[in-house]
Length: 413
Length: 93
Image 1 (cartoon, rainbow over the protein chains, first blue to last red):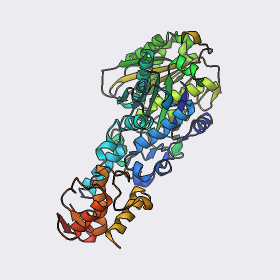
Image 2 (cartoon, rainbow over the protein chains, first blue to last red; image 1 turned 180 degrees about the vertical axis):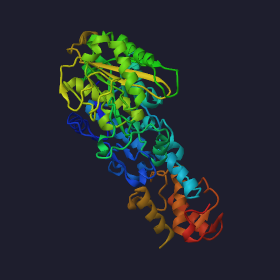
Image 3 (cartoon, rainbow over the protein chains, first blue to last red; image 1 turned 90 degrees about the horizontal axis):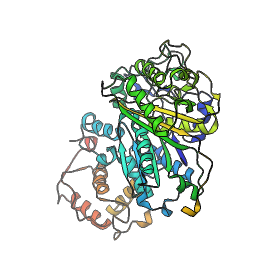
Image 4 (cartoon, one colour; image 1 turned 90 degrees about the vertical axis):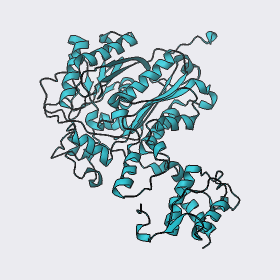
């Protein structure tokens, strides 16, 4: 991993996000009445993001908010990695993106025009803006990436899948450099109402809306939707060494399983097998994992099942591994969650700090691990795991570990 | 205000085209307008001239002058339009 980029509720740059996470700040807030009117759960985790600061109006017309967020986060990751695609074999560079809802803003605008305004003035670009593969397409076009360009949509594990699949392409020597991540922009009236109707969103905390998302707490009431994007530059090891790249960490393993039990209800077995599969792929024993960034949605079901799954895989050691759900602060970014949380896990690894789970004041007997409540903690971390589990049942688990000492046999290159 | 002036205003304001680029001979492509942008431009023209364009514009609108002549023909009633009252111009179906 040689480049990181984020546009998230707690910061539109890696440093700002990290500073706020370590300080335990929350980006959850009451949404403006234009969005929240009529909602049982009028809260969300928005990004302070103004597309007009990044794109000229003619370009902006072509970009749904989800593509805007994706392009800005991808640009950050590319700049951070200092990879110069003009110097690369373009057909060996690609982009994989995960998104759950795609161009929801455009879809919603179109229906608003049609049904609310009773007008037939649908924007000619609507299809191109709304299509789920638009973020990947624009990134590919902007950077001239002629290798594989794919979009994964597996709900809340979409971008974890995108990262895992991208790493596999590199392992299989099909490509040299992959841009992989996720983007989501679900804070739209229609999307919010759809989630609200499912009764899966958190009840607003009467005293402090920012404390509404309480993963693993007995008082948890559900998830809080967030928006944003996160991208990682993944690169073949020798390729990164030869160009003198800064290497954050090594992408060590990816596990993928499907529950196929129920459209929403997770299974302990499916989650545990995904974690075990990632460990196997990384060739690591459970003892090697020093931090788990949990899926931790703060729904009744997920947090108890995930806790049990972690115990299944890690046994007695489960209680000794710091776990946290940073969703307590940045909310649930759905299709972008896996990428954002993996970036956070990598930052934890490289900086030796475990970010906290906030608002966990009342423990739940079904959730009895060390969730790093309330405060960040220093720790020497060798390898970290990031869990992403989805409606539909696609479980994706990613592992990163400290990059080994640099050595490359230049004669063999 | 001539038709060219009005079109120039729309292109500079809504499409970020530099004023000095807009000449009668300039092609829409060089100004950064593709075929979908031209379709969208029709909404702006409807608003500006309070007309409802009922047929797609011809596909051979290649230059600024082509668009000017097309607008003029719309206003002269030589092509498929109908006048609408300003208050419902943007919501008329």
